Length: 472
Image (cartoon, rainbow, N blue to C red):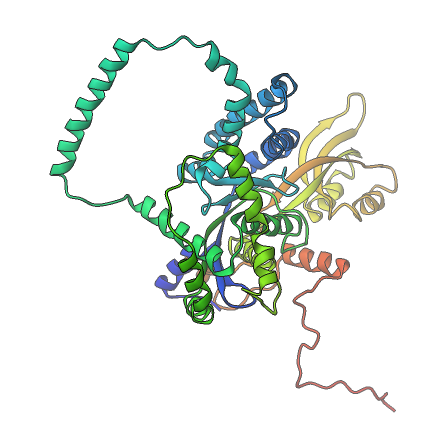
């Protein structure tokens, strides 16, 4: 099918790389987006996997009992990685909006917490982001002694600065009083709305925020390990969790069913002003919150035939990540071999015919001194290299011996699911469905070899019937 309506095309472009879905019990829904990263950035992240592992280790297993000397070198390495990462984002021309989201809401890399993919969760607080967590660890381990050594601030300049600040505040307040009251900024209101929906999910299902976040990261890890095209690792994708909320109809039914329980809880609980809590008290509260989900399930507050809600959220996030990835015009990243050949001048044209048939790229062509042999350096995809050496020997009568060495990765620019959308494409290809291109055929062959589901029809024409009897 081809969409000729421009309004429908614009709607399709807006939904490109986006997916919305529901859990198995149809009581919770989520929205996930995916943004492609520059290929240079993905190559750089692959080289920095050890630094990412170190950063993740510092953030997840931080302990105040560890001495500063044991982790000082590790902090320097992680800090240098983050500084280079910020510069690389700017150098590769990543959009500013995406850079701000990465700095504020980046949770982890993937797969295996050290790959070239990123997970951004806009539902968390900025203090729970990877950048801010590392800064807190850095401040604790590196700057405690510096604060003790600093000289006390003089009182007189401080008073003068306070007076200046008070004057500035009065001027700003007078200027703000003349302006119309518009309330919070648009992005702040949007953030509060998303946070309110996220809190609603925790309230309805009586689960802890840590459990929801761990389910989201588990779904992200599974998707990056098993891509939707070939069940291989994904490269250069940034997944963004926009929102998670309870469906209104199910929320109303849930409130009606458990109204008495909520009323009894609200009557027993009284609002009191809590004093400032120490960090040890907060840790005890976090430990108590972790077991809240198991207590809620044991008490029978929420039971579901589809299993725990955390498992449903994990499968939902994994399904939406795969769906959004397919909606974002994915490409295949092929492994490349570097090959060196010595070819005679007589058979040079035949060898180039074999090279073009196997989608190889010629890097260099040099004539050897005092001989009639040419030295060819080419790049050939791993998928095309299985029958390459045999065909080369057939053309050269068994003389050349190609040497294949793994070179790296390269993006295949062909779209396996190409559909004519623009006017130029409609004029060139027409309204009819195009036959499968070379990349789609390669995907189907790999999936068939792995035992995965393919789109090939077992019965091409159900109206026709083949006669099994032999002709006499």
